[in-house]
Length: 69
Image 1 (cartoon, rainbow, N blue to C red):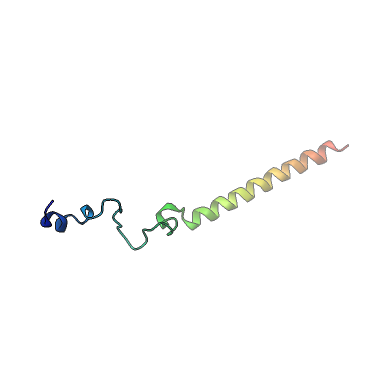
Image 2 (image 1 turned 30 degrees about the horizontal axis):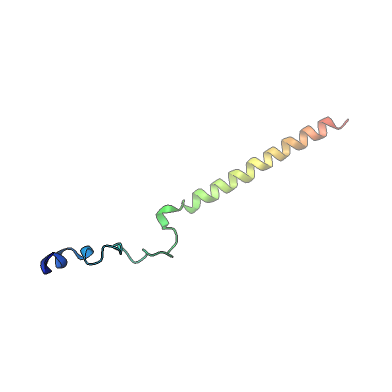
């Protein structure tokens, strides 16, 4: 490998270190914004979960009241 190879291929200088492509690429940067769900989707799922549990609790209450004779 000559001097021209090292100048054209900087990754060949140290093959053990991966090339970094952006400012937020490191071991402790956390998840990227692309990896997370949009906030509106998260809020909608939370509302659906609360609503479904509320409906289930209401049905449980109806059966409880109907069965208490």
